Image (cartoon, rainbow, N blue to C red; front, top):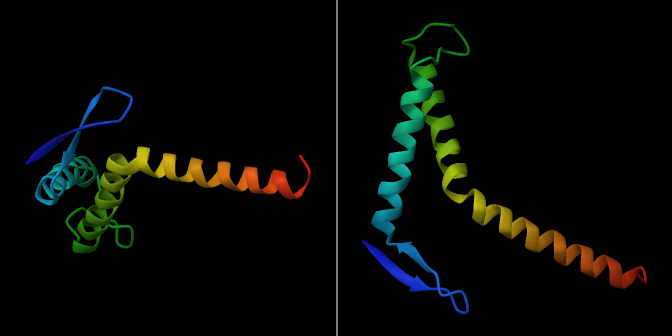
Length: 96
């Protein structure tokens, strides 16, 4: 399920997961966050513990947390590249 790839110039091996590996990894994180969140989650509308709306909100928040946990580094590097590009472009126009 996993492929090894060597980053050019670094000599380090990084794992690249197949689609099925990525899904299993995501659902593992999702189940972990779902268990943590739903153990103390109550419905935001009625305040009951067993309400389906509370369980659905726990599932949605778990998916958001799982995505953030898995892809935070990629998002950070992407935003960093964008802001550095904007900084360089802005510096050229203002004579800095």
